[in-house]
Amino acid sequence: MRENTLKNKKSKIKMQNDKVKFKNEFKKRLYMFTLKLIEFIDKLPKDNVSRRIGDQLLRSGTSIIANHTEGQAASSKKDFTNFFNYSLKSANESKLWIALLRDSGRVTASDTSWFLKELDEIANIFGSSILTLRGKR
Image (cartoon, rainbow, N blue to C red; front, side, top):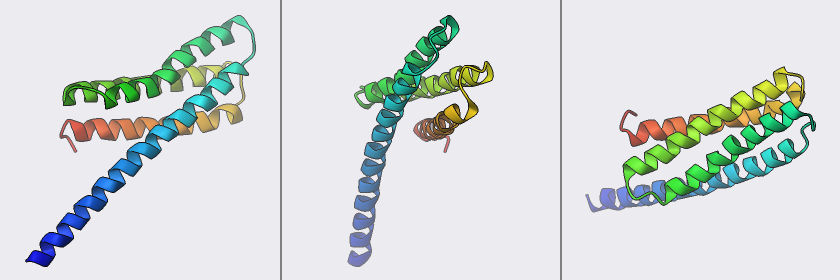
């Protein structure tokens, strides 16, 4: 019996360490995504439409990590969940702006494919986290 208790404790500690590692890696991933996005926006054509869409993309794209960071300091589970929800919405909005840049011919599909894939993965992580936080998973 004592041996099972010890195994359970070790298993819980490993799970906690894995969660901490995942959280840290995810935050780094968001940070690197944001840096690449800023570089991408900076290289957009300088026409009026590209600048305006770029401004919107900068707002929504940086909002992802900003809300994630703010959520980490939330005072309640509800606030924490809400900040993750804002990040999810910002990821989805960013996909729209990138798709518009691509489909209007301002950038190529190859310029946007990594961003769209990364945003899909980021949105899936936030969506899954929100479901878990709400107890629906």
